[in-house]
Image (cartoon, rainbow, N blue to C red):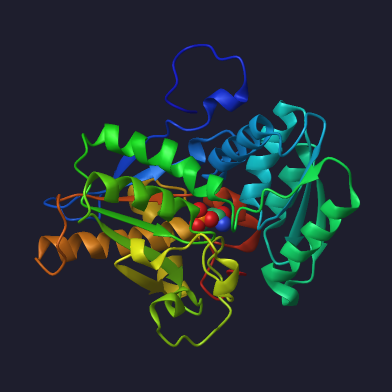
Amino acid sequence: MTTHREPLDSVLETIGETPLVRVHDSPDAVPVYAKLESFNPGASIKDRIGKHMLERMLDRGDLDPGGTVIEPTAGNTGIGLAVAAGQLGLEAVFVVPERFSLEKQQLMRALGADVINTPTDEGMGYAIERAHELAAELDNAAVPQQFSNPLNAEAHYETTAPEVDEALDGAVGAVVAGCGTAGTLMGMARYFRERDPNTHVVAVEPAGSAYREFLGEEVAHEPYKTEGIGTHDIDTNALFDPDLVDDIRAVPDREAHAEMGRLAAEEGQLVASSAAANSLVATAVAHGIDEGRIDAPYDCVVTVFPDSSERYLSKGVYRSFEEWEG
Ligand code: PMP
């Protein structure tokens, strides 16, 4: 599925080097390009951090071969870590709040991992606590902890961002990405701000999520259906650095849902709700640059499409908005 052309020894070598494709709804004068992360072997952007975090943790001796990784995860990180753990000789255990998609949990189990569910109402904070309790009970176990591990953002600084840079010959005016852990956005923002301090950086979250509290805004916390991005407790989002961000935009579920349908019907992109939210905000930023409301060093906006809509078909993503279960 990837752009690799030589025979490879391990599935881990197929991670990254994903295609960068124009979003056709963006203005011609300021195109938006999206990195299609479902081309990774575990079919999401999180394969990058699964491989990077585990390889570095083994190198550093934070984990020994034969050890166990335990991670609180909404799903894609579990799949990415499970792909890497299996190939690197590690066991994997995931603590997943119940509301997250069953497809993801089935894939983690198929890859050889154990999945432990926590009540949806207890949120991600509780899943994080349980992961640490379990790690303390086992020998040779470690919690990569994607929410606070700098290796998460480093994976994107070292792979996602340089791939984009090379594909566009450095002409990246703005970076837009939805924030779950914020690893994707922080890694890319740091890379492109080092290249040009005026690179415009925009975080994306679902309406109802609380990332805007980082900018001192008051936010009404509400449940949302868009999966993989947003927060209800900014204390858990230790990687997010407001100094690297110009703006945080909230996308209502209804708009993300409509854009998911449009991307499939008009652009042949079978991508999920977080990709749709990114597409809307990246296109709005491109119009802002085109109309002179946003300053950016180049007339080009980059975003990511983190995973595929196929992972959420059981939740009715392509049915009516009301039928879509968050
Ligand atoms: N979209 C999806 C589908 C995801 O699973 C995630 C990760 N939770 C993200 C976006 C956000 O990525 P990050 O954690 O790097 O902010």
